[in-house]
Image 1: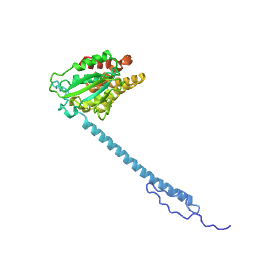
Image 2: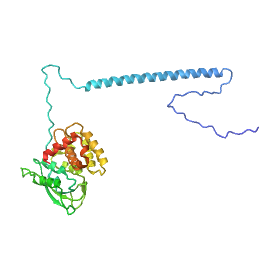
Image 3: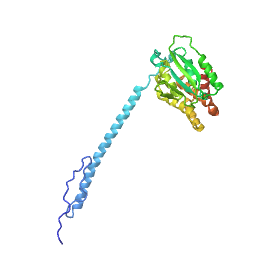
Image 4: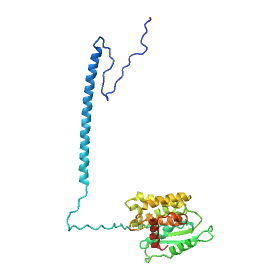
Length: 309
């Protein structure tokens, strides 16, 4: 037959060095002892490979023992010291956390307007005014928009209470609020700049804003767990603004789970979360009266008793 030249030229391939090299299984040995020689070489290579593997496993075992020993030492170092086991040992009394009081920044105290529906009364304003009464004079003046033919008895009571509550010290810094009863639905809005008209929507977000402007000891962002507080405030916002009753029930269930069996979200003191939750539950009470558990009802009663609503 005719001879043909190779179609492909020999190609030099650089083999990686990250793996153990092995000799080809099939070689060009000739003669009767080729298979036996190849088998002997393969056995030798496997023994070398097995020895290397055993060494690696031994090193890993030693490293694991070192890590376990270090973890044990760290636990012993971080273990709190045990009190002396004597009859005369006296347990130290836990001191209540003292909130830092700072001067109020007067540049934050600018007049603003709140538009609220009589069906969704912003009870949070009244609670803040009561809690701030010795630090800041939150002056509220009420008006009724033409879209509201008549105020409900609850709105009239709220209006009378918040306008008649005045601090004894007239020299306190003043923050003026104009409350307009208006048909805005559940989306209570606050306008801080009439020229720019950039409203802050939702009573919960208004409370967030006022918390930053008012006395520092009432600023929820200075607490240890701000993330959890924001989560609770978000749930209060959804409880008010969810339109479907089924969705409101799910949000209330989440809020109740966060409260658990504790008397309030803020411990012994009334926190912004307690204020927001109380206002939200009072606004949806008619639709969800049967779903409010006893502990949540106690929280609402406690905050309501402070301001007399």
